Length: 150
Image (cartoon, rainbow, N blue to C red; front, side, top):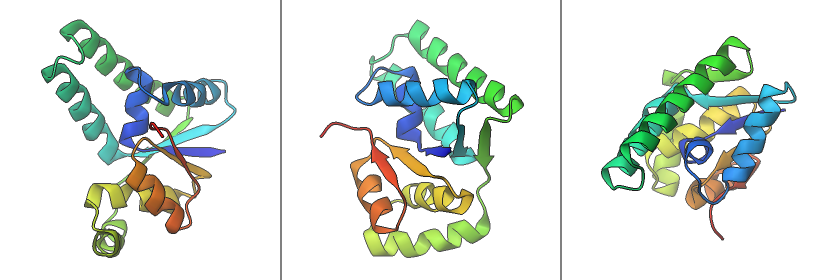
């Protein structure tokens, strides 16, 4: 199984939120070799930005911010070395395809990129904490699990 994680899903591994248990299980299964994880190179910057935003809003203190940031980068490098993580490049062809989703659904290009990257890599399921991405992914034929509150 190949599980594609968007930024909102990845953050749930490092900050306790609704759906963190599901993401924790995905990482545990990846480390045991049962599944592979994937996300876009774009997500690395987004996750670092979200963690920084949480620190600036005092949702994370400095120590927990540094710990979450370090754990994210360590997990990413370790999973890459173990060949249990596939990082998708941002491809021009996918960006061009994003334009259709941006206009069709009135979403950000970064959100369209998640759906189309999951499709392009052949992910069995996309995991997201974003309800809109979830709804659009399903409309676009991508198996998607929503990790946010109901």
